Image (cartoon, rainbow, N blue to C red):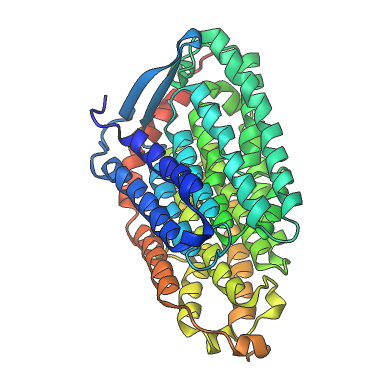
Length: 493
């Protein structure tokens, strides 16, 4: 039991700052609103520092645990904790929130308080999802994240923002209804909402398959897996830059986290039985969706489809049931959080100047924005899986694990190195290189100080994780070992 409520602080600090902005912020004091929003994001990040510095790598047990009464009639508790499978997602959320606030600093001019508040509240809710150890609490946080993201897309999005917001909301809400049914069933079977109690519940194969499918519907939409991925490109295209960053960097990880916290440990026999389905869907995402990304004319759509392909690596790593694959899946999920965020931030820099996401409208940007071009090159290379960047580490681990599982699965998965390089570098070449395409490009100003340091900070994170991934792998190793050991033992009663 942690004597200091670190996880509660990480959840509620940004939420309280967001609520304060909604209550007192307005466009007349926009400068103050931005400062308060940044303070809330930084304090939220500061609250998560002990999760990194005081984390015990030697155990798979839950750490920084907090418990309090909540709904006594249902035995539901305010129960929080993290292990190696969740701690990095909490850290990723807190870090990305700071970047989102900085990215919208000078860009958003109307309803600044509501914009910043939406992201701060969303940040706290997302951390709540990753920290919840009570199934009902998890579901409340999981569903609550829809509201601020729906508002972000619907209010500050592009011309088709209402359509994209509705599609995002309905896909995710409908997908999670079956999850609620599974949660209620597990409660009736165990008399508890504790996720750790559910891990130990003896279930028949039929029960496990039904529960696995119920969770799969929700988590597959969130990842998103093919063929329920079609909401993502629309949401990305219409969302403001900050919305795209949070969608790609964090919200897609809710589905990945759901598989390792719910599907695998609660229904291990069904996970083995249906692994062929998960591997097939993952490979379709890696190969087919990678090819779809190659033909996109919109930069945001291209990166959105590349996110589907990269997250296919994550689900593949989970369901080949070996340590190397699962380690690679977690590393890939964290890496994708940084790289995809950086890619959308770069596209946002161009969009703020040109108000166009079409690749054909650019060309020769390096002639007018050399500093931006250099940083964008690094992120494009990381998106393609260049060794030395975070994009390489996770993919390499998953491919090694896939070779151990089946050579042809590994062969198909490794094709992402080709498709990733093709769509990332072809987009970069058409946007950045060549002669100046038009008068608008000729008049572009290079990145300012705020944008420069924001992208440099993101570049340092991408390089640090690529060169020295040990902090991530050390913190996840014990929990991954325990999960694989748990999944290897049949629970059929």
